Length: 395
Ligand SMILES: Nc1ncnc2c1ncn2[C@@H]1O[C@H](COP(=O)(O)OP(=O)(O)OP(=O)(O)O)[C@@H](O)[C@H]1O
Ligand SMILES: [Mg+2]
Image (cartoon, rainbow, N blue to C red; front, side):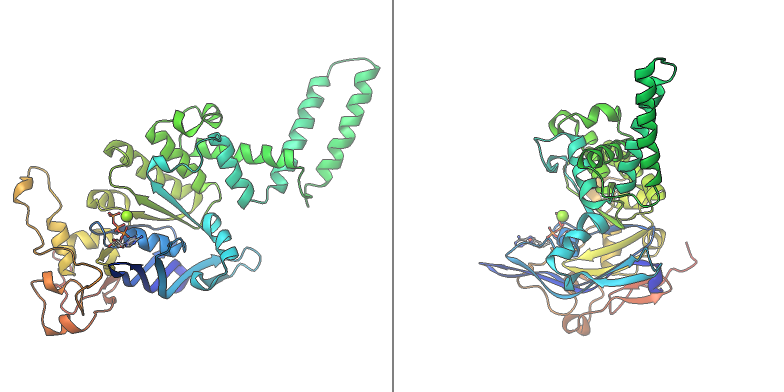
């Protein structure tokens, strides 16, 4: 795959947590990539490191956690030169990271309780984000011009000396502002705020929020879970990020609301051109909404390919096990096959391939050598010494 299709490439990411019990080796060489316009599902059992991966990408890992290795490459289009620049997020200053968070990579925690601030209205909070990340000079000037035009319209038809001098004055100001449209000056704060509020309301409309004008004035607690979720997405999209990461909490939303939100994300992707990472342990969600999947196991990435390929032709024994554990319609849940053994303790993880103690295909090499993620057939990456046979065309 050529790098010019990519927006994100994570290479050999290592994140550890230094706890009293010992060093939790949470991420042990995570590799993943995201292409422009893709919706990628990041899947794996609870505790496998999905959230730590997301937090590491944004450099939001808090002590006792530390990112200790790897590269997080972001491919950022340079609007002036038209070239794409490769930026290693692990090398940026904290100040530059503030620009990355929000403007380039946004994260939505799928837990509606996490709305940033309970005491400000939804409109003010989204507008705040917009003001932080957008220039708004042109938008603010346009609002000013529109206001003057409306004032002029109101005076239209009114006779008398007073209104004719007022009309003249307004026309002069209008001409003055219109002449600035090619190179708008730094806006007056009042108009900057008005422009941000307008964009905020447009964003609420984009995420299909019912009665967006009313919601602008409401506080987070006044909205239902699903509406709050929409507002969070509106806020994340308000800065038109390159990448949106949605980290699903296990219990946050009911299934219908979740499905609606994910479908909405896919629709929005087409409109705003954002690439998306959906973190979930629900394979059904992946099947319905993701074009690409990356599977994690115990702090490592084990398989990565197109969604359909993963479902029909899993090559890593862990993925195959995970898929047989997905309940199918009319199947008795209690008789589902399971992957034997249990998820390893990440303070003393198994050497070599972290999955080997649970794997039916493991041999000596699996106990000693960590398998690297390799492209074993076109578009299909697997980290395994003994990948399952390629079913290829036999679907
Ligand atoms: N603050 C912390 N201190 C110690 N260990 C931590 C900390 N945060 C995460 N971990 C460990 O890192 C590993 C990965 O956790 P993570 O939250 O990324 O899992 P996850 O895949 O997101 O799980 P879930 O599906 O339940 O959200 C876990 O073993 C967890 O115990
Ligand atoms: Mg998580």
